[in-house]
Length: 255
Image (cartoon, rainbow, N blue to C red):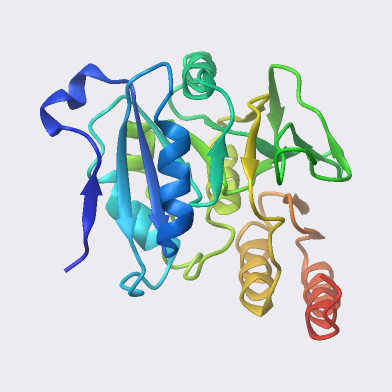
């Protein structure tokens, strides 16, 4: 039986605008996240999905389970190693959500198709920003988003669940969702929210394999995929080249 933890009284769900969904396997990191949420200026609900015993085989399955519990207008998916810096972080994020359409997606780490520079204002500790990034001003259109902090209208994610077949591990489920969203002629946005993400990301063999199959899936939609961690042409030669090159880096520990 999966343990689902609702942090708030379910009778008050309809009085709030946003629910946070977090699948965690590190209780210490998750509790740090919860502590950083205590002083937020707006009320919210949180669905904490306990995966410390490995009950879920992929994040897509876990988050699809989580979204089924959401009763608010908006949903935010976030990693367990996120720390919010300001009391108005969620309030400001909701303000941006109100500016997008129901089938759009909004995150805080994105990349555009015309540039390989990641767009974000987040830190990886309380002092240092991520290197080789471009600061975001307001709300900007992008191609794909990182998984650490993103969301949109709850009804959209209920109608369009994460792809459990294509993203059958713990990587790229937000990238795939962004591509699916854009293929349906909707938009993906990144905004200037500042927070801490205690991870620089990790590319491994599962990531590379997953990225290859996403490139194959979307090669009729776009000739090139930009993601915050890896970019590639989507034709056979391009995706094979990217896969082999990235696998060699994994083997040689160059990531």
